[in-house]
Length: 234
Image (cartoon, rainbow, N blue to C red; front, side, top):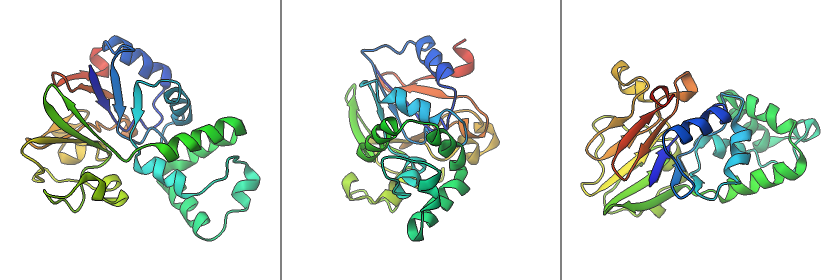
């Protein structure tokens, strides 16, 4: 079975693991997390360490992970590292902190250098997108949708900005034969009736239900399009 979720934003790891178990996720299944496990909540680094140990769970890069990478930290992070930031690196760090990166930095400052090296390597190697076929249906998995969309454009031709910062409208249409699955835009942005719920159109699905603003995570199983909501799994 293939599951997707997104925008965990530092949700408590133990709660998320119990959620997966209660929803029926098993080691032989695959989970794609469509970016933004970091920031806002305090458990993002813990989630990353866990992801690195689970080969059946794949992180697709989100804009919050990208903002961390753009700080261009060395393989060790300390108060001395922060004090030495200058120019574009300092500007990137300030941008990240302004977007709630401070809570993640606090975690990194208390993380061993050997672990930081592995975390940064993992994030640098995380893909911007994934294309998969489940039961004969094709899905494009990205963090935010497809900016500057063109039907004949290859997914590899989209820029990081197109894939990380786009906010589709309800009227946005993509393909007739490919479903684009993304997060980034909390579903409530499409209307109060969508608060905490997945938004589906005939060409795309938004699975960011707003964990970063106090909601609980959701899983979507692509094999049968079943939705698993945290509150109904306990």
